[in-house]
Amino acid sequence: MNVVITGSRGLIGRYTVDHARAALRDQAGAQIISVDQGGMGDWTANYRVADLTDAGQTFTALSGADAVIHLAAIKDHGLVGEPKLFLDNTAMTYHVLEAARHLRIPRVVLASSVQVSRTVRMLRDTRYRYLPLDEAHPVDPQNDYALSKQVGEVMADLYAGVYGLSIVSLRFSAVTRREDMAGWPTPVAAPPHWALYAYVDVRDAARCAWLAATVPLAPATHHVAFVVARDTMTATPSAEIARGFFPDAELRAPLDGHASLISGENARRLLGFEATHSCRDPV
Ligand SMILES: NC(=O)c1ccc[n+]([C@@H]2O[C@H](COP(=O)([O-])OP(=O)(O)OC[C@H]3O[C@@H](n4cnc5c(N)ncnc54)[C@H](O)[C@@H]3O)[C@@H](O)[C@H]2O)c1
Picture (cartoon, rainbow, N blue to C red):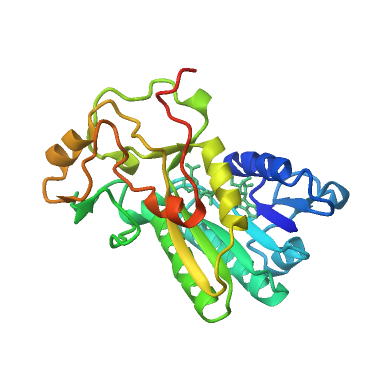
């Protein structure tokens, strides 16, 4: 099995490559191929340099893959101008899906984001229909980045339904290294309720990406799953946050203690994934 991981020099990419290499260690002939835009390419070391906003480079970079974990992107609003962010991110996703279609790569994992669900900068209102939020809740992107991720999910519907690919869109919450969680849980929940206090340790995020590339799934299906820790990053109890800040939301689970306000149930059911790390773990 050959798996291409794009954005391999980024935060999630580095951990995913390490996790994938360890997982495939005993499989003769299996290869993990890293792709990113930086540095010198080395095909013998399975590192390919490509600018994925270029279709030809994307096709070359993905050649020989049985699955692609597409993590490359401009990772948040404000890092570059809005037109560039939106066009680069959507172009990269489009090229990856086109390459998968034409090169007959049956499985694609896309990095989406909790931001498609209005979880940052609640500009218009702070209402959710229900909590914990899940994948059935209407999406409502609030910026160029979130929009680029929603468009990626829409593209995935088409490439699964029309071209038969099996695609998993992972809606990552705030992906964070344990050493960068100093000060968590934060003492008090307050607007703008960034990411609804959802986060996931990068080691869990990498494991989830690998599961999404490798668990058996039917062809011609597109699945969407939030990727979250079991708890929130704030000390304010979750039921208190829901009652105090989101009084219109129907409570569909008890939200005991610091339970996540975003459900990880779909990732558990679909991929067998449950986060094992918490910001409350001793360092
Ligand atoms: N980190 C988070 O909290 C988080 C949360 C939700 C979603 N995501 C998504 O997960 C993915 C990975 O995030 P990350 O935190 O590792 O980001 P990162 O910025 O650390 O890594 C992204 C990588 O993509 C590469 N890249 C960017 N443009 C490229 C291009 N044109 N061609 C080739 N490579 C290119 C960069 O060089 C970089 O190595 C992204 O799609 C991001 O939007 C991340």
